[in-house]
Amino acid sequence: QLQLVESGGGLVQPGGSLRLSCAASGFRLDNYAIGWFRQATGKEREGFSCIGTIDAYTTYADSVKGRFTISRDNAKNTVYLQMNSLKPEDTAVYSCAAVPIRGCTYSPRYEYDYWGQGTQVTVSS
Image (tube, rainbow, N blue to C red; front, side, top):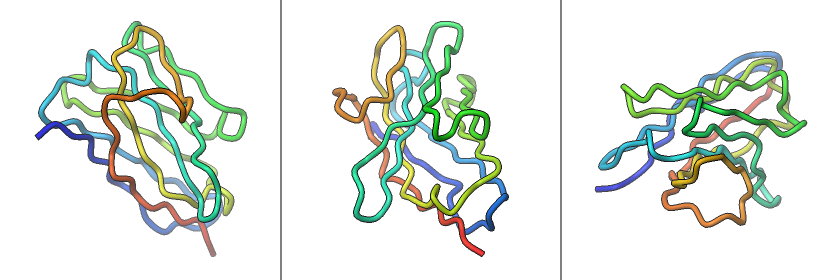
């Protein structure tokens, strides 16, 4: 079965950290750029980071820049999202998506080949 599976979400206090994983099964992630997205209750899906296939190019939206780090381990067929200095406004369902392009994109409107089911991140005291 070809799929992406996110894990690592949970409840964390403001200022805390979490590391999310996006693991592929049934296909190799090396050939895909990966985007990370989140959707808070009652809001539209927001893309905020991506990592490319060439030199693992990365980019971030201003909302997470300096706090979140995206990386990939092709040997483990997994992309990671390290989230530090978490804020209550980071609370959302976090999802990853894969697309076979040379650069990378985190536009929610792009046509991705695969989406994960999402993992809940809640930042609250």
